[in-house]
Length: 199
Image (tube, rainbow, N blue to C red; front, side, top):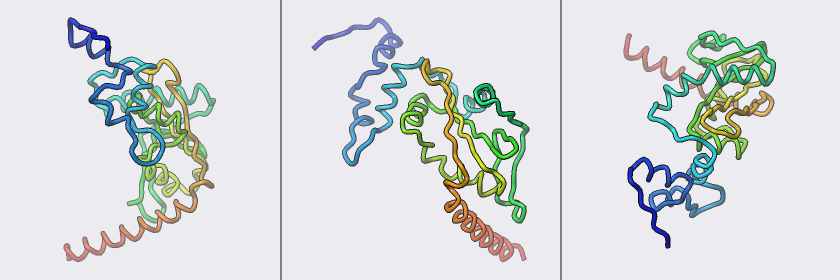
């Protein structure tokens, strides 16, 4: 066993980066199934990037969104309108989405996640589960939308700070129809209850 001594907490924290420690082991060990837990991706992120600061995830995402769209435009040549808009369905304005950017037949959704989540999305080539319904809502709201580009951007990473995952309508059409009907039914029930309570 080796022992390392540190003068400051900052030095100690930096020395822990990229290592499996006692407090991190629970985020590494997989007891059922295969795959990796978030601790695995944190280890990779710590070896590839600079430490995160105290900025909130929401503030960071808002601040970096335009940079992500700019990088997308630079890499693809696609012109993206970043006007502050909300799309709604023609027949029901209560079914809506606010795109981060859009073009003639595509939209973009920028995600500036933690470095670990960014690396996870890159390695798995999957949009994180928590954005599954958001992904579908784009196609539910806009019948003319052909493609959605999820933009992943983390300038703290020295390798792969930006990448996209493309979603095509044809690949999600069945789910789009299912959740469109689901939303219509929910909104119908909401209206019934509101009418009962107000009249």
